[in-house]
Image 1 (cartoon, rainbow, N blue to C red):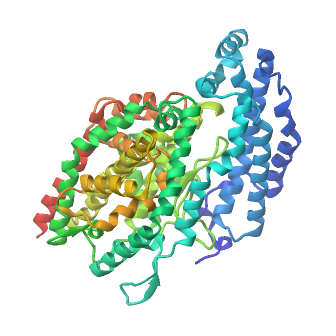
Image 2: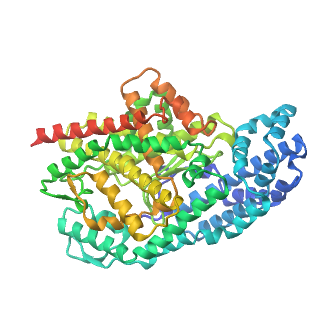
Length: 599
Ligand SMILES: [Zn+2]
């Protein structure tokens, strides 16, 4: 692999536009160090006058914005080459500074919350410049009814590390202490089974191998069932007790409240999913047919339905042309931005020694929305580009159209722009491919995206809901309880065409997302929203493009649900979920027709 120093400049992102030299970076660093204390100028007196409040907020804004720039530059730089000692040092230095600033600043939120929203409103009348902070201040004051006394907050924050023991210990057990033994891979080589290579091995064409890794991995988890259950129980108990202390109806309410999401959205997702489970059953039936198996086991469901004899490879320039063309579906204004992404140094293209694997889109208010990829020319690499460009253009338009304090969009909408692009890209490739096998391969990818992002994540979301309800009803989560709830859900989600191998009941204990309480449902809602948007655009619905572009400019100025309404998506209706799964059904239909034609 090439070293970073050997990478041509046209293949690198242009982060030198943030800082041309380390000296320049260090000037901003020094400025921040010298001005840290400015943040506390009115500590204890912030709400004494409208001008104190304004000055504090302006200082915070100015310093936070600059801090973002130095930290993100250092992180981006580090991600391109973690073997570079100077980059490592710079990154650590900036992170230290970030910690210092956040400590210095931690007084502000509690201090604001000791005042009242009325005071803020009066101050906004008195000093209209304060109005630009209305949205960000309102987000702070929303939690006023869910804030404890200073003394109580202090107790909780002192205990916060201990409260994470369940999560931390489970992580250590799953990722370090647990081993899964050896298996013989397809080439006859003996290898150590791990959580990481499991994902690849379970897709092997060698059925015995799939079966072995499936059983071996889950059996190992089963041996630790009581410990894993106890650790998870303590995590759930933590959120349940905190929700009680902070006056929420449930832990789920607490988690969703923080993101301005009504609990109804969650319940409707699950309702919509239940009503469309027959589509998923049909998908498994299709898998069984295409794979030609008399019995479809759980260790058979991850395998690709279509294996191309030789995978087609794309050069980066070919990828660029395809992505620009495909995203033309969003109109010429959007397409110009896609070109900009390719031509103005947003993208760091290829792998090199020490570069972080995978792909992401990242930047700050004072930078381009950079994209890191490790492009090697596969179809997946090209569609990843379309995906990341979706994130980046969403960020770009949010920055262009909003002030610093309001530009960041919420997690609930974060995957909408990226998956909309992915769907449009796949649709374009389907329409433009002349090769039946390639078409089938693309359809396979699309179907897997829906299955994995909507149904599977919804199953996890439902499991979480049931686990938490148990604890909220006064029970505790034993291994038996967790296994039986999980096993029943697997049976429900896979249907009668799949053999539900008993080992699956331990699967709950290997899912890291169960430690991100009530997060995963957003994968399902995000793709459902994207599907609605992409479909409307492809069908040329009135104003679909315009509404979507408007949505991309909103940043964090409105609650996520309101923003999506502007894009033409009503997440409060379960039909939105069901429409997305209708589309999934149409993919299954297309696949069947094309597959039968081929034979
Ligand atoms: Zn993404």
